[in-house]
Length: 315
Image (cartoon, rainbow, N blue to C red; front, side, top):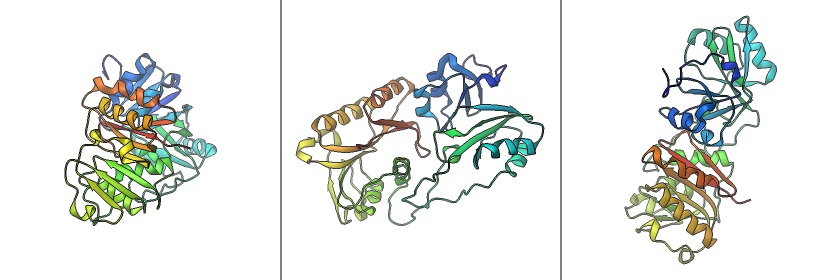
């Protein structure tokens, strides 16, 4: 048996029009959002009769316009994919040898860690899986430009006091926009300073806010101002205008929403990138309120854990 009373394999997966690839351990929120639209669940892949925006928030990758095809051979399957486009990412939960042989007949994908900043390739990335030995499922239109929603970066061993900057980098890559010299950022919940380091490295000035201390090497960087206080006690108008508001602060989602609302109503921030951290499934519904803010995007990043990232960037 699968999630709840759902069978692991539905009678006819060709009924599915969309698939959601869940991050590790996060199948449940996707299934809960879809409800009766679920056709089948196999490990991390959830097939559905029709899409649901809330399910896509939790997915590492959403496979739109899902197609199915019975294939006569490995070559036949590869030919079908190549007839649609060049780039294809494989997700496999079985039939590993046969899937690998088919993958070997497709153009290879570059899997090297990416530098930052990084420009997303213009060529689309499709997704496919071998559901049965002769049944393929594929989507040429996916939510992520990366195979299985995974992007890894070239790490900096010296400089950042934590690896949290990778989450910020991923969000900015998806936005295809980032702070530049001359812009002012505020980093809420900044300690130990990973996001502050990344923002300062882009040439922006950074106001780092946290009751905990920043790493001394980060606090001493040019264009970094540190205030040892709570992000929730700040008066936006007293802080003054900022181009970017960033938050990776640990708090209940409602408290973050109240903070964001206060800054938006004050008109003191143009762009927002915030991590919504959840304590339990009963808090997931508040993501709808973030998504309802005009111009918003809610995603689960590869570098997120049990959390979502809310992004709102002015035109």
